[in-house]
Image 1 (cartoon, rainbow, N blue to C red):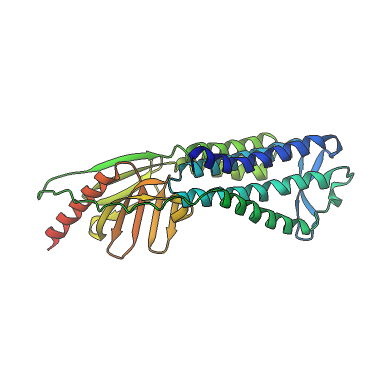
Image 2 (image 1 turned 180 degrees about the vertical axis):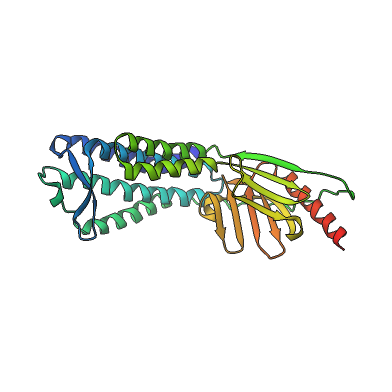
Length: 315
């Protein structure tokens, strides 16, 4: 399946949800009160409210930001399983976010007292069933693709006793940075239109994610160090004495680790800004650490050479 088709299958559900929400809202704008109920308790009664303009723009910003994020994640996934799963989850998310936004507009139409607005609980069943069905449909529309070939082992770079060598590279995600910016922009838009509860968390999340859209990976006599390209902490440090080997691998961030960022799996840890080329480091405790970075073959060869020399010096 081409990248264009994968991107379209991910983006279309969000486009439909955005158009549906905007269309229903504008069609019923004159029937809506100045302050509409936007949040409901378990019993179906309204317990939070927003102005019409804030409700419209914050809902649109949320859908657009999520659409950009899921589309970027799908396009960056080089393995078919990861892009297929991401597109399916994205489609389900588009429905589960868009449906309650549309229903909220409809239940607020023609009411005089918004404190009396009710959202029947049967909508929850429709929400869950529709989200699963939409995700399953997109999953079926995307083919599984061929199985990838395993990567060859990475050789060791021989180093003489006392010879100094180091490798360092900064990796910036071209997909995560726009997504983080979109989330921050959505939060800023919500703040401008008066929604403090929605705007502040989105703005903070966008700025935090932006700080970790770039990492610096260093291989030297100390081992492997991974830090944010902007902040000195937190950092991931693997001492040379704990490393037993390194390889250059192809990794699918979504399919193998469930997403981007710092990911934890049984006996595996990952610092993932994209899918594709990555440095894989195995420790004496049997755990694997995977860091997506370009020129990982050089990093792995140097790390193997440093590890071999360290083991000889220790013996």
